[in-house]
Length: 100
Image (cartoon, rainbow, N blue to C red; front, side, top):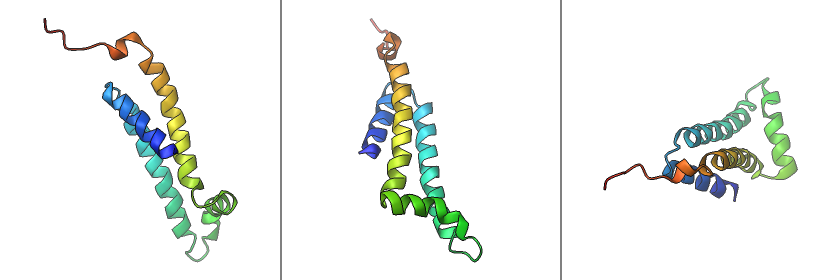
């Protein structure tokens, strides 16, 4: 559900011409999830077990969907705030094509 909200808000902002924030937030979300996966694999190296502790604790407590839910939920909340600020302006819905 959080991934759907994130993608919907990204598409909504992009459609209205606000492309920078969705690109930045989606990149940060993907980086967060990739870092969680990388630290889990890196924790299997000798002497690096401490790297996987945060992700392992989160997964043991909330289940395997906790990392994507938290990453996408935080990103969707950020884009919701941005969309609320940007799309409530009258100029956000103005047409730029002024052909008579």
